[in-house]
Image (tube, rainbow, N blue to C red):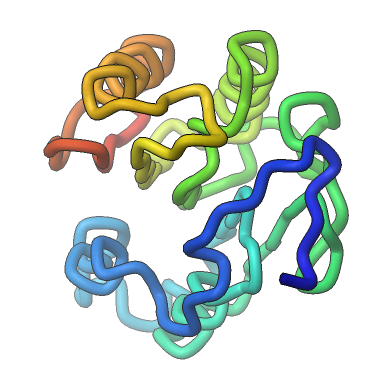
Length: 174
């Protein structure tokens, strides 16, 4: 594999070429079709974008303002997730994708990232989070993954739109 992460952790899903099924199936919950041309104006942040498959999917569906961030800058902007600040101003983001990332961060890194997510989120911002148990992550079992999902959701304090095993979509109600 060509992608080597700073923490020697690698998400096997980064080799996939198409958007995650959860994103494909639930994109309407991030911005309903009624948004129409509004999609062009919405700021999207893809944190831990990997090879850019979700960012590319968003572009194909009318989004133009996409900031893709990853620890390896072969796609998007280079960022040490859980340490660096997200390079956006406060309350500037409409949609946040955080797919298959949080389980690779330790507790301190997750707390920092959640603070950054809250900082950049507009009051109506929507977030999509996906997790899975991985042997080289902080969540090696299904139960650890479910505990992490609850921890992240509770730390955000946002309203559930969709919540299922290992994934959720929520809206900032501030």
